[in-house]
Structures are given as structure tokens and as C-alpha cells.
Length: 420
Image (cartoon, rainbow, N blue to C red; front, side):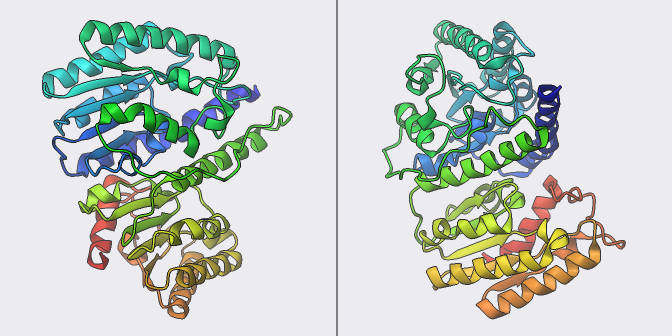
């Protein structure tokens, strides 16, 4: 029952973001002749244009995607007429589909791209191994890895048949047992940490065709699922924490971007392709879905090392109602620390968007404005432009959990453009 609940939770969480993310891609400008990385969370988690030092890379990974999910959105890929597409998909198809069924979906994706964008070169990456004690593998990691090996074999044969490049990344990520994911490369026995992406970048770079960029080494500890923990809520909490730590570790390996514009904070920041929506190569995403104010404080050294021209911050939407005093004090601490560490950087603090408690959020935003006055930052109050008469979030802009729609992000971008 525990595994069923966890699997259901995982499926539900993924489904919340997928429709909005698909919709948001449609409002982004066409980027012809570039490269697209297409896949699930392992693709979604990474900042590929930073990893390879190229502005011509689009990230089209979506957390939780399967081969069916990718097939449903393949037209959005071909509209860009990309020079190259890198497929990395299949992990989430098990155990719902057989390797043959996954391959059939990928074949249909490739056929669609060939028909709509005939000059696009297709690259298919092997599915990576997984490690033990991964909470979402209902049938265990042994069965999962056997399935992965079989799917990779089929991918290799398919690419040889079609003349596509098959990139066998799988061996480089195997532990000493030759079967499971190497612990040095993963944050939770499934997803990659920063050092895992360093390895992946070395493998993919000849196919991407870029020169090596200086990458760091992540120092944050991995967060692994304790096999002794059986409480479902504790396991879910552990999974959420692992995702946030993983994202922070990925930032650690990226080069510093002097004079850049950073978008930092929680899910609203992570979930948008800011560089694309503003068509501005100076912009880099440093959002972490679910980040608390306390976790944002820990991110200050990573943000300040860039000596950015501007940093846009959205944080505290949960604390605004649940613990406003702690949220405001933590935000104050973070903003003052950022200002001290990077005094030439202009800081912009976004107000909390409408939610379930209009009075609490408005009072919290007053507190944020006070922090900005004290720190010499700029407060951007978005509340009224996103709300209905009853104080709730306008549904055309998103949901009350503050997951914005495509129109919501378009409206937010219009609101922020004058500050860029």
C-alpha cells in the first residue's frame, strides 16, 4: 500500500505541472537552427545552455514525462526546425510499458520530426541505470535495470537501422557491481547530481559540438532515501528535499556569469524559460521548486558568486500565510546578505501572488516592501494585476497553488520587462 500511495503521489505531482508546461512552451518564440534536449526530469533538471556554453540550446524536459507524453508534444519540438534533437526518455515508462512499446512511441516521434523538420539530426541517449532504495520503483530496482538494459539494446538497433546516432551513456554511470547507478553521480539513486551532469556533459559534448567550459564540483551532500523509513509522509518529504538539494548541486558546477541577470527563488522562477521568454542571453535561471525562505538563504553564496547585474527574487509564498514572521525575517536576512556580498547587484523582490488568504498575503507584501526600503532593493507588487475582485488568483493566470499558466507567465513577463 505504501508503494502504491507513493507512486500515486509521484504521478499526481507530475500531472500538475505537465499541462501548464506544455501550454507555456507554445507562447515562447521559435528558435530555428538550434539544439533541443527532450525528455523527462533528468533533462528538465539541467541548465543545458550553461553546461555546454551555448545559447542555442533549448530545454524541453518535463519532470515525469514518458514516451507517450513526449509523443503528445512532439509538434512543439519540430516547429523550431532544430538542427539537432537529443532524446532521453523511457525511465518513467516502466512498468506500464514494455521496451517494444516505448520504442514504438520513440519511432513515431522520430517519424514526426522527419516529416516536419527533415533537416534535423536525431540523437537517442540510452536510459541511465538506477540504484537501490528508490521509493518509486514498485517492482524494485533489479527489474527496472533489466528493463533498461533491454530498452537500450533496442534503441541501439533502431538507431543503426535508421542512421541515427545512439549515445550509450549507460556504462559510464554504472557502479562497481556493473548493474546499478554509481553513488557518486546521483542524489537519490535515480536523478543526477552536479557531478553526474559533468560526466554526462563529457559524453555528449562531441555530439553537441561545443568546446568544453570550466565546470565546478558540487559539494552538497547527497540525500538518499533511508530504507529504514517506512512512514509515507516522511518518504514524500524526503523525496521533495532530494529534489531541492539536487537542483542546488547542479548550480554549483555551472560557470560564474559576470554581469548576468538571475531569476531566483521558488517554483514560479524555476518553471519558466526566462531566457527564451525575454529573448535575452544575459538571463540565467536559479529557481528551485518548493524552496523555503530558509533554503533560499543557503543559496546566497551561489547567487553572489556571479556578480550579477540584476537578481529577481520570488520567495516566501508558503510562509506568507503559515509563518509570516519567520518568512519576513528570513527574507530580510537573505536580501541583506546578498546586498553585502554583491553590492553592485540590483535586487528586485517580487510580491507574493494572490492565494487563499488575501489579508495575510497583503500584509506580508507590505513587509516585503519594508525590507526593500531597508536594503535598497526594488519591490515589485504584482498582487492587484493577478487578482480577481474576491482576492483570489485570476484563473486565466494560474491556480491558487501559484502554478502559473502560459497566460500567467506572459503577463508576468510583461510586468517585469521594464525592469530589465
